[in-house]
Image 1 (cartoon, helix red, strand yellow):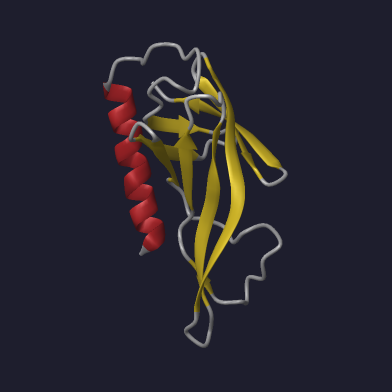
Image 2: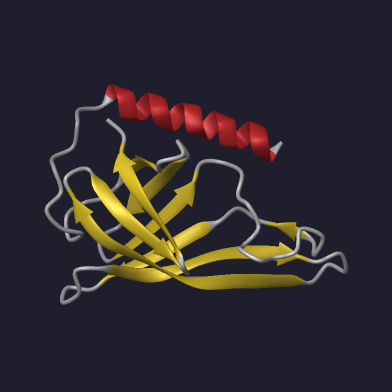
Length: 138
């Protein structure tokens, strides 16, 4: 069910991005960043920019966190939450995901995340030791 929902969201996001005018080139992370973004592997993300806070949602099935056991339980979809600080050119936040264990316990798994730069039509996402360059879809 989740895979079908992710595929539907991906299709909708791609269509919406294709039907809208290209956003202006970015000069900094202080500018509006909302929209659909894509990494080098073709995976898409939906970024909601709410001014001081931003949320980034992968539009693909979420993998378990790095180093996590695939038999530990059921993992929820990922979400990235960022905060925009006027004096900081980077956006700081966290990547989080819920784990429901076989006994029914729910654990929130978090790791630091940052958007390090926003230039032209791309941004640099850093999660733990992994980095990805995301490009805004047109």
